Picture 1 (cartoon, rainbow, N blue to C red):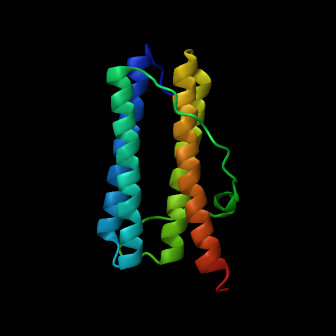
Picture 2 (cartoon, one colour):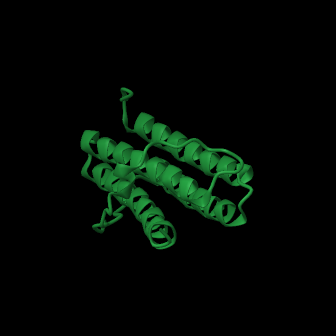
Length: 151
């Protein structure tokens, strides 16, 4: 993992990662010929923008109490091979790609929480990790409801 000299570096990195996630989901939405898939990717781009805004607020005002909740992990993403984004991507493949992306974001924020020294920064990164976990769970539920049950 990248070395950070101070909390400002950590926040800049996390803000950059959130922007990368926004760009990723917008690109997938643009590539998709499936309107349902495109809509879902736009929604997730908006969620990632909220995360970026929260991080930018923390950078200016300092960490605040975020609170955390436990998210159930269906672990579906653990059983899928990686897929590549394509313009004619099927809905099930788009869901797998999204699950994998959210799992990676969860791991990133968990690692940042583990490395943070200040308790409020640890809490903030754990909060963001849980947000990514909620996204992954949403994709897993969608996959379970619309892919696994159809087969």
